[in-house]
Length: 391
Image 1 (cartoon, rainbow, N blue to C red):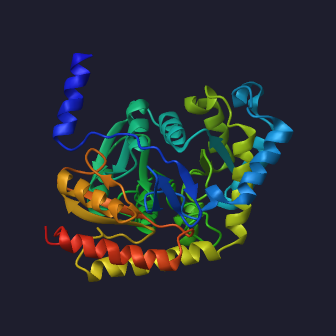
Image 2 (image 1 turned 30 degrees about the vertical axis):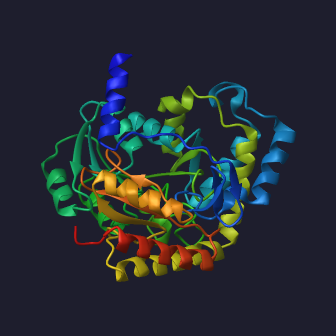
């Protein structure tokens, strides 16, 4: 235990120690109450405000009343309820694929699918800024890993050319969670087809936000049928919990038999499935919230850039502001909180050393007026603290 205390002290000295904070209440308008203070929540992944939507709450209650609070077993035992089947059919239609399978979390989906599809002797090519769960899945798989620099397709092609692995799997986030930029998906599809590789995309931060009906970047670009493995979550824009993988029926049947995080986990509880099903309906038929979100995010990014702040190439509702070192990043975040904004500092190992930033996550629940006021506050405080794009 002494070693643990020493490591915690070391983290404290590097401004890297993390602590839980209690959210006392979730309030309308994308706000929260923390330690008695009402804050505009610019750190949530609830991009459409659906976690507080009365329709999702009602759907969860209805599912609980009919099916109970829990599934009672794993899916391959007796936990595969008709409700799971119905939601997965709806999910596949939403994604535009033959089939889909739901996992208990997005983390478990990534770990499960990667470890099921690749193994020793195979090669995985991963963008350096991919989700941590992707890298954990790669470690579990036992496959060899080639990490290519962020969005560097020339480097990726060189790696593909020299690889002789029987199975080659390219993996990328579609929306990158710390920079808010987009994967060059059309070029990645061309590369995977040219070199006979598989392509897996993680649509966690794109699901519900991009695409004609909110299915993600692949749908937005008309590339759904040319992507082999579609992964995403319900815990962000869809306001609930769980992960998914969508693709052809052969892929999904294989995961039923080989994805350990699916096989050996108790099935998602009925109330969560009820909320997921309703969220899929709402997102598909109500495009206005995501249009509003993306329009407001574009204005927000322009305002920060005009003030000389580095938003690291953001193209989406995730808008980081680069600060650099850990301590000034924490200072910036703390100052924002004093002025009514909840914006969490991201530090190593989430980001590379020297690249700490405050990340702002916008939501359709935020009013235009609140976002305008927030922008003014951020720019003003950044000026006082000398945060700028010239590091």
